[in-house]
Image (tube, rainbow, N blue to C red; front, top):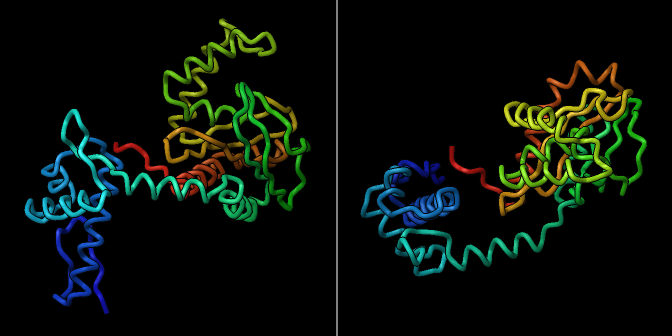
Length: 272
C-alpha cells in the first residue's frame, strides 16, 4: 500500500516503487500549483523554500509543469503564475457549477444542525435577493418569498456581503447607499455602518439583532467565487427570543459552511 506524501517534505515517506514515486511527484506538483495560485508571481527558489523541496526537485517539477501549460512566466517579472492549462481547467469547473446547486447540500446540512431557517441570497444593486431557502423544524419569522429583496445595511446577508468586498469597492458602495434617496443610510449614520462592517470582519460573520425585523435575529457569512469576489451570502434566522442567545454559536457554523462552499467554487483565500 502506498504511503502518504506530505507536500512540504520534498519526498515520499515510503519506499521506492515506481507507482509511489509517481504519486509523490504528482503530490508535489499539485502542491506547487496550489502555492502559485495563492502567491501569484513567485520564483522557483521561493517555491522550493516554501514547500521544503530541494532546488533541483523544484526546478525539475516547475519545468515540467511549464511544458504542460500548467505554469507560465509573467512577462514583466519572469516569475511564475498559473498557465493556460490551469485556466482552461478552472473555466470548465466554473461552467459546470451553478451556485444554487453547489450550495443546496450545504444549506440542508446547516438547516439540519441549527433547525432554523437557512437562506441563500445574491447581490442585486443595493439589496440582497433570496434565491434559495431551507426551512428548519422550529417556528420561523422569515416569511418573504424567493425573489424578495433585503437591504444591505441592516440585514445579516447584506452586512456579510459588504464586509467581504475589497476595501475600495466597499467605500464606493457605501457612497451609493448614502446617495440613494431610498436608503436610510446618511452621511451622519454611515460611520455606524462602517463600524459594524469592521466588527463583522473581525468576527468572521455578520449579525442582525432585531435590526431589520423586531421579531427575528440572524447571522450570516459570504461565499466567494474563484475570482475572490463575494457572489452570495448565507444566513441562519429564527425567532429573536430563541435565536438571539444562539448567534455566537451559529455565526461560526455559517462562516465555516461558506468557507467550504467558497473552496468548492474555486476560491483560495489570500496568504496571510
